[in-house]
Image 1 (cartoon, rainbow, N blue to C red):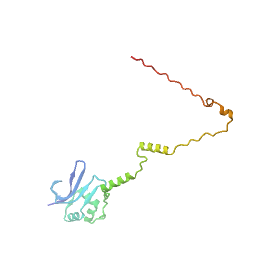
Image 2 (tube, rainbow, N blue to C red):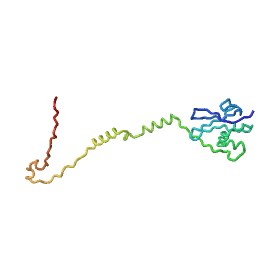
Image 3 (spheres, helix red, strand yellow):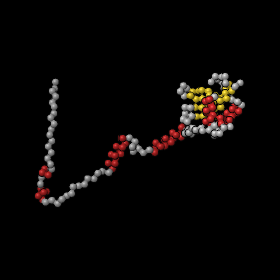
Image 4 (cartoon, rainbow, N blue to C red):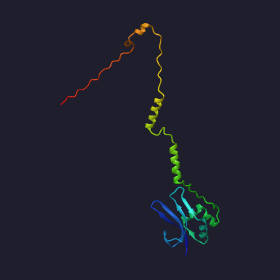
Length: 178
Protein backbone atom coordinates (compact mmCIF):
# COMPACT_ATOMS: atom_id res chain seq x y z
CA UNK A 1 0.00 0.00 0.00
CA UNK A 2 1.36 3.40 -1.00
CA UNK A 3 0.88 6.08 1.69
CA UNK A 4 0.60 9.80 1.03
CA UNK A 5 0.63 12.87 3.27
CA UNK A 6 -2.10 15.08 1.86
CA UNK A 7 -4.63 17.80 2.64
CA UNK A 8 -8.24 17.02 3.56
CA UNK A 9 -10.45 20.01 2.77
CA UNK A 10 -13.00 21.28 5.27
CA UNK A 11 -14.92 24.54 5.68
CA UNK A 12 -17.34 26.55 3.62
CA UNK A 13 -17.12 27.53 -0.04
CA UNK A 14 -14.87 30.57 0.34
CA UNK A 15 -13.37 29.81 3.75
CA UNK A 16 -11.24 26.68 3.38
CA UNK A 17 -9.59 24.85 6.26
CA UNK A 18 -7.45 21.81 5.78
CA UNK A 19 -6.30 18.86 7.86
CA UNK A 20 -2.91 17.38 7.07
CA UNK A 21 -3.56 13.64 7.03
CA UNK A 22 -1.88 10.33 6.27
CA UNK A 23 -4.02 8.38 3.77
CA UNK A 24 -3.85 5.69 1.10
CA UNK A 25 -2.76 7.19 -2.22
CA UNK A 26 -5.69 5.52 -4.02
CA UNK A 27 -8.32 7.04 -1.71
CA UNK A 28 -10.33 10.19 -2.43
CA UNK A 29 -9.31 13.58 -1.03
CA UNK A 30 -11.81 13.63 1.84
CA UNK A 31 -12.07 9.89 2.44
CA UNK A 32 -11.10 8.07 5.60
CA UNK A 33 -7.56 8.88 6.76
CA UNK A 34 -5.07 6.72 8.63
CA UNK A 35 -3.95 9.54 10.92
CA UNK A 36 -4.35 13.29 11.29
CA UNK A 37 -1.01 15.03 11.86
CA UNK A 38 -1.79 18.72 11.52
CA UNK A 39 -3.98 21.63 10.45
CA UNK A 40 -3.68 24.39 7.86
CA UNK A 41 -5.87 27.48 7.62
CA UNK A 42 -4.92 29.87 4.78
CA UNK A 43 -7.70 32.37 5.53
CA UNK A 44 -6.06 33.93 8.58
CA UNK A 45 -3.14 36.36 8.40
CA UNK A 46 -0.50 34.93 8.78
CA UNK A 47 -1.71 31.50 7.72
CA UNK A 48 -2.19 29.01 10.54
CA UNK A 49 0.03 25.94 10.17
CA UNK A 50 0.08 23.40 13.00
CA UNK A 51 2.02 20.19 12.45
CA UNK A 52 2.92 17.35 14.82
CA UNK A 53 6.60 17.30 13.90
CA UNK A 54 7.33 13.96 15.59
CA UNK A 55 4.65 12.13 13.58
CA UNK A 56 5.72 13.82 10.32
CA UNK A 57 9.29 12.64 10.89
CA UNK A 58 8.04 9.10 11.50
CA UNK A 59 5.86 8.94 8.37
CA UNK A 60 8.52 10.49 6.13
CA UNK A 61 10.98 7.97 7.60
CA UNK A 62 8.80 4.95 6.69
CA UNK A 63 8.32 6.18 3.11
CA UNK A 64 5.13 8.28 3.03
CA UNK A 65 5.20 10.71 0.09
CA UNK A 66 3.89 14.26 0.67
CA UNK A 67 1.86 15.99 -2.04
CA UNK A 68 3.19 19.23 -3.54
CA UNK A 69 1.03 21.40 -1.27
CA UNK A 70 2.03 19.49 1.86
CA UNK A 71 5.69 19.62 0.81
CA UNK A 72 5.47 23.42 0.65
CA UNK A 73 3.89 23.53 4.14
CA UNK A 74 6.50 21.16 5.58
CA UNK A 75 9.28 23.33 4.12
CA UNK A 76 7.78 26.35 5.89
CA UNK A 77 7.74 24.52 9.23
CA UNK A 78 11.20 23.03 8.61
CA UNK A 79 10.08 19.39 8.96
CA UNK A 80 10.87 18.50 5.33
CA UNK A 81 14.47 19.73 5.66
CA UNK A 82 14.88 17.91 8.99
CA UNK A 83 13.67 14.61 7.53
CA UNK A 84 15.90 14.83 4.45
CA UNK A 85 18.99 16.22 6.22
CA UNK A 86 18.90 19.55 4.37
CA UNK A 87 20.00 22.91 5.83
CA UNK A 88 17.28 25.27 7.11
CA UNK A 89 15.55 22.86 9.46
CA UNK A 90 14.36 25.74 11.66
CA UNK A 91 11.84 26.81 9.00
CA UNK A 92 10.36 30.26 8.49
CA UNK A 93 6.95 29.86 10.08
CA UNK A 94 5.30 33.08 11.23
CA UNK A 95 3.40 32.60 14.46
CA UNK A 96 -0.13 33.77 15.07
CA UNK A 97 -0.44 36.71 17.48
CA UNK A 98 -1.68 35.75 20.93
CA UNK A 99 -5.44 36.10 21.24
CA UNK A 100 -6.77 38.31 23.99
CA UNK A 101 -9.48 36.82 26.17
CA UNK A 102 -12.85 38.43 25.36
CA UNK A 103 -13.63 39.09 29.01
CA UNK A 104 -10.30 40.86 29.58
CA UNK A 105 -10.78 42.99 26.45
CA UNK A 106 -14.33 43.92 27.52
CA UNK A 107 -13.23 44.90 31.03
CA UNK A 108 -10.40 47.02 29.63
CA UNK A 109 -12.82 48.81 27.27
CA UNK A 110 -15.26 49.53 30.14
CA UNK A 111 -12.46 50.84 32.33
CA UNK A 112 -11.23 53.11 29.54
CA UNK A 113 -14.75 54.43 28.94
CA UNK A 114 -15.17 55.24 32.64
CA UNK A 115 -11.95 57.28 32.69
CA UNK A 116 -12.96 59.31 29.66
CA UNK A 117 -13.78 62.96 30.47
CA UNK A 118 -17.40 63.99 29.98
CA UNK A 119 -16.54 67.55 28.82
CA UNK A 120 -16.66 66.84 25.11
CA UNK A 121 -19.18 64.01 25.28
CA UNK A 122 -22.04 65.79 23.52
CA UNK A 123 -22.88 69.22 22.28
CA UNK A 124 -25.58 69.78 24.91
CA UNK A 125 -23.26 69.09 27.83
CA UNK A 126 -20.65 71.43 26.39
CA UNK A 127 -23.20 74.23 26.09
CA UNK A 128 -24.44 73.55 29.61
CA UNK A 129 -20.87 73.74 30.92
CA UNK A 130 -20.40 77.12 29.21
CA UNK A 131 -23.62 78.46 30.76
CA UNK A 132 -22.58 77.25 34.19
CA UNK A 133 -19.19 78.91 33.82
CA UNK A 134 -20.88 82.16 32.74
CA UNK A 135 -23.20 82.11 35.77
CA UNK A 136 -20.46 81.35 38.25
CA UNK A 137 -18.18 84.13 36.97
CA UNK A 138 -20.40 87.06 35.95
CA UNK A 139 -18.82 89.66 33.71
CA UNK A 140 -18.08 92.88 35.59
CA UNK A 141 -18.64 95.93 33.44
CA UNK A 142 -16.44 98.90 34.06
CA UNK A 143 -18.34 102.01 35.03
CA UNK A 144 -17.81 105.08 32.86
CA UNK A 145 -15.32 107.42 34.45
CA UNK A 146 -17.09 110.17 36.29
CA UNK A 147 -15.74 113.56 35.31
CA UNK A 148 -16.17 116.52 37.51
CA UNK A 149 -19.08 118.43 36.15
CA UNK A 150 -20.27 121.92 36.60
CA UNK A 151 -23.75 122.70 37.87
CA UNK A 152 -24.86 123.80 34.39
CA UNK A 153 -24.09 120.39 32.95
CA UNK A 154 -25.97 118.65 35.74
CA UNK A 155 -29.06 120.65 34.97
CA UNK A 156 -28.95 119.70 31.31
CA UNK A 157 -31.85 117.53 30.30
CA UNK A 158 -31.14 113.89 29.65
CA UNK A 159 -32.79 113.98 26.23
CA UNK A 160 -30.08 116.25 24.88
CA UNK A 161 -27.26 113.89 25.80
CA UNK A 162 -28.89 110.70 24.57
CA UNK A 163 -29.12 110.20 20.80
CA UNK A 164 -32.58 110.14 19.44
CA UNK A 165 -33.82 106.87 18.06
CA UNK A 166 -36.63 106.74 15.57
CA UNK A 167 -38.69 103.59 15.42
CA UNK A 168 -40.63 103.13 12.24
CA UNK A 169 -43.60 100.87 12.20
CA UNK A 170 -43.71 98.25 9.50
CA UNK A 171 -46.80 98.40 7.33
CA UNK A 172 -49.19 95.61 8.15
CA UNK A 173 -51.08 93.80 5.51
CA UNK A 174 -54.75 93.56 6.04
CA UNK A 175 -56.36 90.37 4.92
CA UNK A 176 -59.82 90.64 3.53
CA UNK A 177 -62.28 88.81 5.67
CA UNK A 178 -64.69 86.68 3.78
